[in-house]
Amino acid sequence: MKNIPVYTKKDFVSDQEVKWCAGCGDFSILSSVQSILPEIGVEKEKMVFVSGIGCSSRFPYYVDTYGFHGIHGRAAAIASGVKAANPDLNVWIMSGDGDSMAIGGNHFIHVLRRNMNVNYVLFNNQIYGLTKGQYSPTTPLGQITKTSPFGTIEHPFKPGELAMGAEGTFYARGIDNNPKQMKEIFLEGAKHEGASLVEILQNCVIFNNGTHKLITAKETRDDHQIYLKDGEKMIFGKEKNKGLVLDGLKLKAVTIGEDGYTMDDILVHDAGQEDPTMAYLLARMSLPELPIAVGVIRAYKAPVYDQLMEQQIEHVKANSKIKNMTDLMNSGQTFTL
Image 1 (cartoon, rainbow, N blue to C red):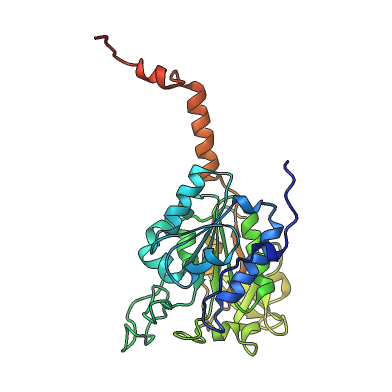
Image 2 (image 1 turned 120 degrees about the horizontal axis):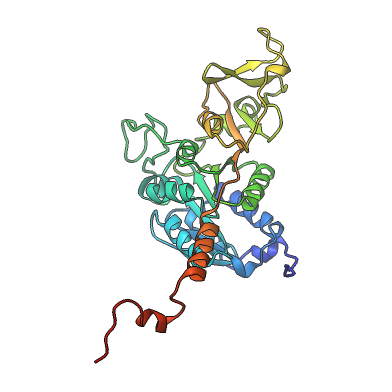
């Protein structure tokens, strides 16, 4: 193996002025990503950050690696081309809920379905921030915005549900005000062979301030979120006395020691199971009946698209009668003038 230089976070901080609003959750996401890049064992010259359009899509300017600022909704398509053309590159997709779930929705599901070996970071602030406050595909039903003055009547997407529907092999969720948690899941996503999707619940202080406050606020977060760890019991709460059980085909939150429930009844998280059904149930949990799942929800090992593509190319080359242009020009029916 080649010797990888020893990097620090500073090596990934660019000389560009960061132009986000003061207090924006994007700052924390940027810092967390820059912090884990020295730990993934990849040379800077082999890292590429690709984005579409939106506040999150300024990301490539702020990381001192190669980058590509694409057009609205097309980051996944561009990144797929980058990875297919050079599978040795470490490719990151930085996108928002509007960029990924609306105009880019088709590309979003297919990059996961194909299991391209890319790292997809989805900033979810449940609003269009850069274009000044229109409702997005993840905006809660009934919310008043610039484009829904009487409340939106559209049912929102849950990115985790779409990921499971596309048979995504890695899905994690984090919160912008918990850098330690973000670093852990970014690192796990970067190590995953295949498409890793990390959704960050991010706050837009200008156009949707407090949209995740029930999950992120210090007073309520312990009872409103559950940090899943592979192989560990699914417990949560300020007193760590609540847990998840299966009630028929649904998940149910219970208090340990009440109604006959003991620690033995609490489910154990298995992020690596092939069947994505449990990951789907965890990803779609919502308040107030159930806590919001954070951490690595699914991490399943499956064949990777770009590796299969390379293997197929090598197989065809090895078994083809045509080895060069001369062979091609003299193949099939030919004639001489």
